[in-house]
Image (tube, rainbow, N blue to C red; front, side, top):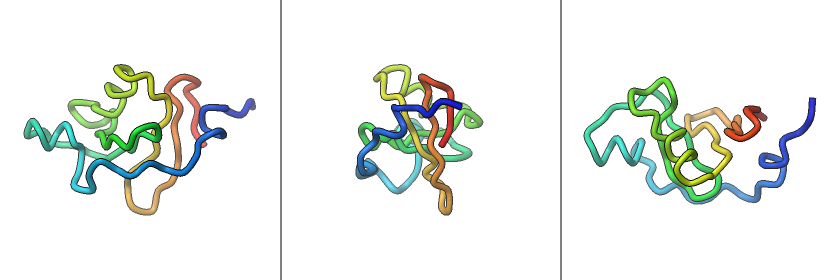
Length: 86
């Protein structure tokens, strides 16, 4: 299996914009299931199991390709471009 360069070339994780939850859901009164951190800018968005799917929406809008789980005890990463995890 090929290694995703978008994931392997990442530097340190950016500072999250918030620790409180999905920043878009917090702003509009929505709810989330799990949280994801954009590794390009620190945006905290909700997962695709959440009603608004803010993390994947952020990736589509900005072109930021990689997120990681922002759940306690999880450190996996996902690349939207190559549809791969690490």
